[in-house]
Image (cartoon, rainbow, N blue to C red):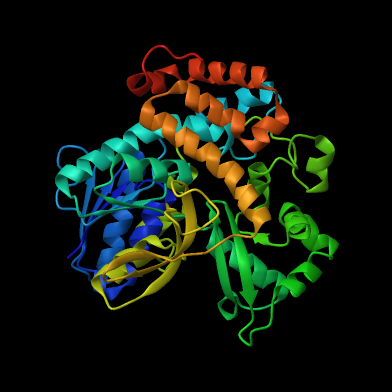
Length: 443
C-alpha cells in the first residue's frame, strides 16, 4: 500500500491527482495524506476524495493535515508538491508585485512564473520551503520520490537535485502533452496517431520529429496549417518560431513568447503575434471560486452533479502506478542533464523523454539538439542555472545577474534599470525573503 503525501492539495492538482490515483485499481488501497495551509481549500478536497473512494468502494485511507511538518512525511513513498509560497499563484500578492514592478521599468511578462524577474523572485521565495520539505524527506522517507509540480520548474527542480541529492526529485509539466495535441489539431488527426521525439528545457521543449503511423513527416502539414490566417492568429508566436527556427515548441503561445526576446518588448511585435500588453493583474487575495457553494467541485460533493472521474493526462500518478504494477510509461520529465542533451551543460535541468517502470524512472539520451534550438535553450538554461546557484549559495548578486541574463528582460531594459527593478522587488517582498536571505536585501 503506497503512502502518498500531497502538499498543496488545495490546488487543482489535488482533485486531479486523487481522481487519477483511484482510476487505477492497483492504487485503491493507497494511504493518501492531503496537506494544505488553507482549511477552506483543504476541506472540500478531502470531502471530495472520500466521496470518490466511497464511489469505488475502495479501502483508500484519506487524511487531511494543515502542514507537512511534525511527522506527516514519515514512511511516505511519494510526495507530490503543488503549492504557491507566499500567496496565491496568479493573483494578489506577491504575484502582483512580480508583474507590476517590472512593468514600471518597461519589462513585459505574460505569466512571470517560470522565467524573467518574476520567475527569479518566485524561486527566491519558494525554494527555501521546497528544500525544507526535501530535507525532512531525507530524514523521514529517504527512498521516497518527490513529484514536483511547483514553478519555476527548472530552477526549483535543479535546486532540489543539488540541495537534497539523497532523494529522487522529478519535475513535471504538461507542455509536451499539450503540444502534441496542438499539432494533432492543426494536421487533422488524433494525437495518439502521431509518433514524436521532443527535448529541450521546460516550456522551451521542441518537437524534433513528428510522424504519422506510416512514417510520413507531419511537419509539412503543420507548416501548411500555419498559412491559414485563423490558425496563425490562434498560435502566432509558435507558428512564427516554426517558420524561423524549423520546429514546434511545446508550451502555449502566450507563455512561450516570454522565453524569447523577439515578441513582447515592442507593441507592433506583440500585435503581430496577437498578444496584448500585460495589464495589472487582479489584486484580490480571494479564495478561488471553485471552493464556493455553487462551484463545480462542491456540486459534485453534494450530489448536484455527477462525479467527474476521467483520468487526466498528467504524468504524476502514472509514475506511482508504474512502481506497483507491470506497467511501463513513456513521459517527458524535468531532470538533471548529465549528458542527456549533449550540447547543453551537464548541470542544466532539461526536459527529456523518460521511461517509468517498477524499477524507477529512466531518462533517455536525446543526443544533440539542432544548433539553433540549443542556442535558444542555452540562453534560458544559463539564467535558470545562475538563479538556482543563487539560492544554493544565498547570493543575491547571482540572483540579480540571472535577471540580467534573462533574454526577454535584457530586451526590455538596460542593466541599471534592471538593478533598480530588482531592488524594488527586494523591498516589496522583504517579509517573504528575510527568513532565508537575511535582512541586507540590496544589490
